[in-house]
Length: 235
Image 1 (spheres, rainbow, N blue to C red):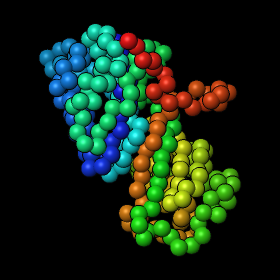
Image 2: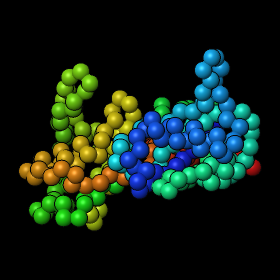
Image 3: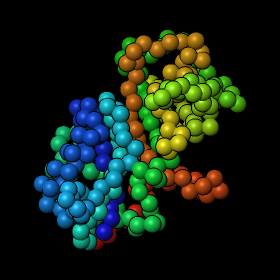
Image 4: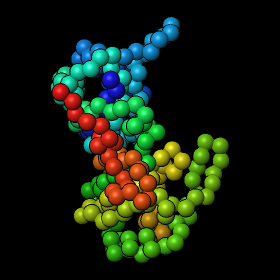
């Protein structure tokens, strides 16, 4: 049995890095005494796969990992037993059974993600920036220089911004998040303010990831579906 576990990560837990988050869940699964499947060989490990890693300092309401179980059991029971082991700031949102070959691996499926960007108190620019968003998105190209591990390259951000909407104290984004076009909300925000001639101070805003999506294709309706929706609850 393969399950997809959706969880939130808020408060002080946002400062726990990706590798430590993986170790955290490994320990929580042991404490919950769930029948987790292990790999073979001399160094067996839990068969689990996380979706796109969350940056240190970023909160999330919709992160995922896939887990192989050694036996079938109700998804609600898995969620309840694991939730009992969660520390403050961590919460199990849902557990869904997924079929191998149909739902794919969480990491490979991620094509887009929602984010909420909010200015910290006293950090919001005093200029009228909200009225400029439509003009920014109307550009045929939004060229930026992206730093890679080995060099720098120029990319066009515009195709990777699926949604950019003004909120009371910041932005709502839906951005491309596949490995080939992963787009950070920090880059979009800083690029926008650079375009209107405003340089933001360091740590001017917070970022919260809200959800992650798979892409069903441009002709599908809806095109993007949550990773959670690709599974089902079982009793």
